[in-house]
Amino acid sequence: MSLATESITSLRAKLTSREIQPGDILDALASSIDQKNDSVGAYLSYDLESAKQEANTADLSKPLGGIPIAIKDNINVKGLPTTCASKFLDGAYTSPYDATVIRKLRDAGAIPFGRANMDEFAMGSTTENSALGTTTNPHDPARTPGGSSGGSAAAVASDTAIAALGSDTGGSIRQPASHCGVVGLKPSYGRVSRYGLVAFASSLDQIGPLSKSVEDAALVLNAISGYDTADSTCLNEEVPDFTQGLNDGVKGMKLGLPKEYFGEGIDPAVRQKIDQAISGLEAQGAELVEISLPHTAYNVATYYIIAPAEASSNLSRFDGVRYGNRVEKPEDILDLYRRSREGGFGPEVKRRIILGTYVLSSGYYDAYYNRAQKVRTLIRKDFQDAYQNVDAILSPVTPSAAPLLGADKDDPLQQYLADIYTLSANLAGICGISVPCGKVASDNGTQLPVGLQILGPHMGEQNILRVARAAEQQA
Amino acid sequence: MSTEHIDVRYIADLARIELSDEECSTFQGQLEAILGYVETLKDVDVEGIEPTAHASPVFDRLRQDASRPGLNQADLLRNAPDSALGQIRVPKVVDPS
Image 1: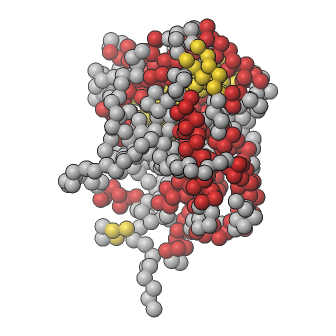
Image 2: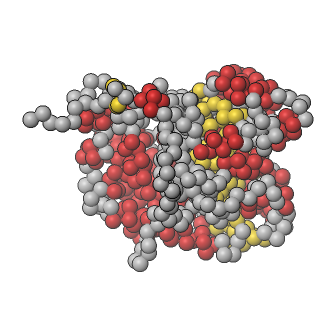
Image 3: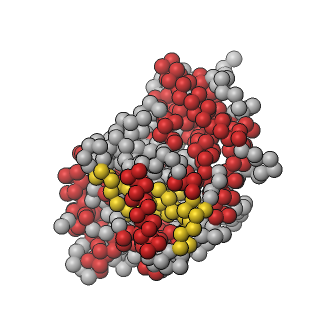
């Protein structure tokens, strides 16, 4: 068995007993990437030599000492390219600094290794919006890995990464984790610093781990969480040890089942796996409580006003002036902006910038953006009310398993509607995790993973990790 | 929330994106569909509801006004498409007339 197939926990035991060296893990990953990256395409780039140099000096006494972690290509790692899977930055940007999460990973002894593919600027749910490469689902090469952190999820699922960082603005960690059969955790808003993450929608973005086990997710979360003066939205709250209490079980916990998340539109085979996981948790002693999140029907509309609005503002920095690719021979500064952005951005990014500019424009601001922000308040309140009575909420991650490549390619609205169960956590600022709960048979004879979503209150990561651990054991 | 007035080329120009005719017509239909869908928000009673800008309470945070290391100028200029004399160069912005 290759070391590339193992979890952080298992590799850490072997490292501390000196059975293996950090370089052995990198060699195993490199050989696995050689075998699989042509078909899976999880990585846009990797630098084995510099990672090996870091491995030579890795401090094995640290919690993640000697463990390579793959990094979504929208997080700055000093000296490496950050492309956001966009032609705008490809070949034209080298990170001049480490994102806070990278500094923290290094402080914990980990080795950032490899840049994972993604939807361009994290906009999409299939990784097909990458301008720089195709990533396929390790469980079925005809299907997408999900997105936007599709490269991170596919790397972990294909044993070409031990664990990875992704970013989640509307489900972009949890949804690809679900489609690829790995664990993916979106932390509460403010738990993890966003400094050095290329901003998509600043009030929604969070960085989080994708991993092979719930315990691994807790270990990475331990390393990346905590106060940072470089991000004014990062909360000054004590970081607990997330591995503590993982195995306490769900006996006596109250788990909410929102009736709006179990209505029409769920694939019956997916529904069956979710129901089985829920019954299993009940059998382990959890108390199931039917709840209501009455504004669920407005999640998609609210999100697809707020996120593009913030994106249109954030992506104005990509103007061809300070970094990135600039059009040749511009007539004047406006021509430079317009044509650099025309050539640098792909269709989904343009679509969202235009949508965001429209909903913020004079005469439409109140009708769209301001109204969406008010509905966001109601969605948040739904969750605050629910957590008065329950410790965590259970739901599907997506209505169906991984879609075929090219499905709904020209119908963005149809793609947006599949985000119904994941967007609310970002709108409400709460935490959520996807944990594998079985597989369903696809039309083309493959077995596709299904994820159970566990949503916790703001700063309630310990609750969801504990439930996820219990669900993982019965899967 | 009327959507029949979305002028894709005008909005793209506000966003400083040049579009081909083909892109314009593709986006027109797709954006009309999305804007039609978000009309559902009209059904929500938001009377007296405060808008949420941030999902967790964020207050102004002050730091000590002290010097601290910044980013390396050479590293930053290496990312610039065009530079001269330690500065980023763009086409002339001032109108000569």
